[in-house]
Length: 388
Image (cartoon, rainbow, N blue to C red; front, side, top):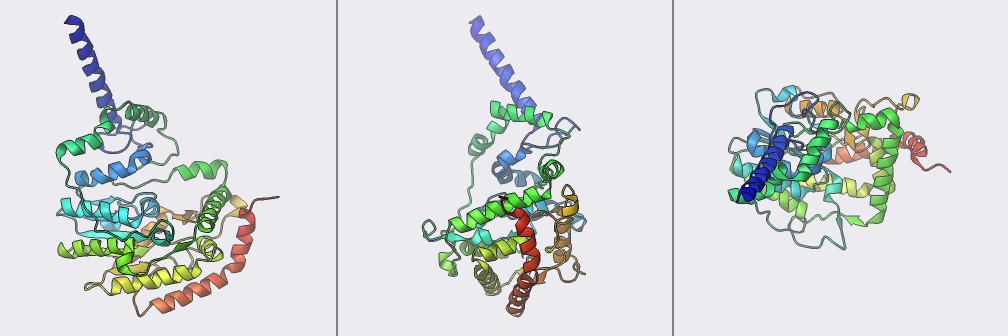
């Protein structure tokens, strides 16, 4: 009996100690226990559990403004932008999440948070691509999950009690002060991991990696965009989102993320430029046909920001507006938010509202921008192609 008591007491002590350490270090940024510089301030392991954390974290934050999208929004839109002064903002954007997944998470927040007043959602053409082989299922209504407390505990208990989390806690401690991606209490990804790559390998490497990734992806599949709402899982999800936000009088604004001009040329050379135009036309028509049309902004055109040149003379120097072709920096995200939300809007020639009256001019300007930057792109592409 004595040995049994000792065994279970030791086991309980070990479990309690591990849970206490994991709660304090909080490697995935779930609880945001008190932070200490050089101990647990940077949540460098948060990216490994981001979808789990962002499913539950908004209920703790209780935001009045929710930012939705993929990794571009997660790294680009800062919830602490001055324009949000006096509001509680959470960035629920998730890397690799498609539109249906993004909407499902947003609907969970809408259902559980009566204080939510506004949703800002970034849109990407690749998130609307379907393949003929795998995407023929008809879209279904997204079901939100009303979990019992024990179901939630089953999902989040490993964040406290598991040895995997304990190992992540140790990694978090050792990575403090380093340039590593981390996610803050409002869900924003600092994107600091890019800094080390820039420092040791240079900006060209980042562009080469994204160039190769996009080329391989776009040439590997035969993508299409479904134009019928009742057959498109993305449009069906957005329809459901707008129905729920209208019921609760939640303001929704959409925007197309700003791609670096090289990204658009890669789309063009892969044979998807017509898809890009059709997609803009599709979402313009789709949103304008709503009973209460939301505001839709387009930041993807060719302009001073998206046409930024690489600093070839200083390859270890970060660009002003981009990390690489697909991900813009917080500095550009700040301008996007100012343009969308400030009464005076942002700089001229950056961002246009998409409406049935403006869409043809937008497509025409895109076509001109593609032609005007072709020579600049050809020069850049030569540096991105494999040598030899």
